[in-house]
Length: 274
Figure (cartoon, rainbow, N blue to C red):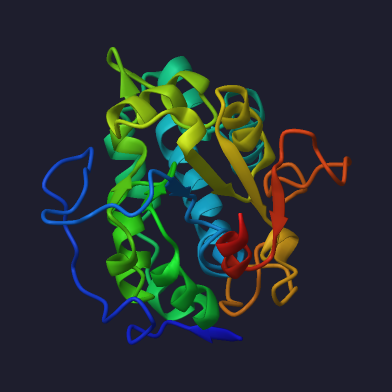
């Protein structure tokens, strides 16, 4: 069952959840019933980001590069895609090659007016999250403010023990977002578990490949890939359509069963059986 933003979902009412540190630990008084740690990607894993965010975010990134790198719109769009392909994130290319300040770029490109009205997720998935045993964290290459907007609007914040956003993914002063294998190891160490205790739930195969390489299990969420959730390409002025991201950006792979994927899922309910 599909639903748009509904803060009265199975995890409880939406609230402005904040954690006391960038690296969350167990909630006070909690009694873990499982050593398993679930690491959930956010965009196109827990909600339909192709519909809600990807198109406007890509445009905002291109506009940022036009303004700050003195490029044409076409040149900025090509360079944005090149950095995404080469570095795994446009931001890393801008930081490495142009000295862009990460916090400024993230704030400028994730304002996304009207985001809350475009958000949608599965009410059934939302309810199942509450039943999933073990600790649950958001692990996203998006900025924290954006992640919290999404989680609070969709009533998902109370389902999770914490949020690990791109601002938290630094080592020795350098950003190391997904799919950096060093960061996956570091996350397990900070959460005081073995990599084998972790399950990464993702739509992007490159991230899963890296996680599997350090010993984590991986679940490939396919519900939202290529805008199949509703299907139309995103364009300015059509706020109800999907983004139409290319195949590499949404994690589609010519191999139907990549060896590093433990399970392919289209619903969070499948995770109850893993």
